[in-house]
Length: 128
Image (cartoon, rainbow, N blue to C red; front, side, top):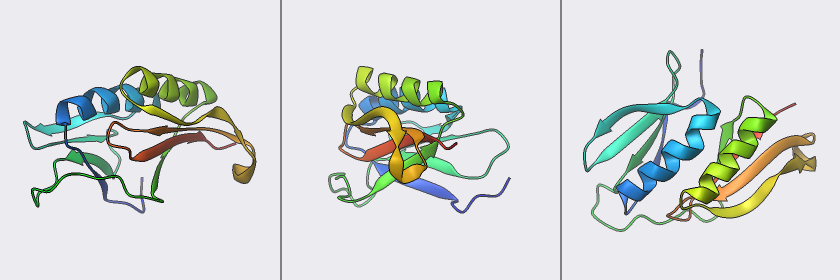
């Protein structure tokens, strides 16, 4: 399968907290931990597919900050996965950025938005 992205890197100041959050929200989407360099970074992906989500402490030594206006959109295989993504995020250090429901701008596809523990905005969508 081909993807337009090779990887997406998200900065974190607390890798343990980020690992708990991302393990929880990515699991309902079929995305799993595939590699970890202890204390430095970890990566998620799907078997046999290109593209990775990498969580890392910024290599320049400065604090990680959220990008204002940036949203990371993830594909969900079902409406139930969107709901599970959202619920898992709230239960594991995330904050609401838009509860699950139809999104008129996306042909009424079901989507949900969260802020991760660092304030990065992520969403999951099941496109109809």
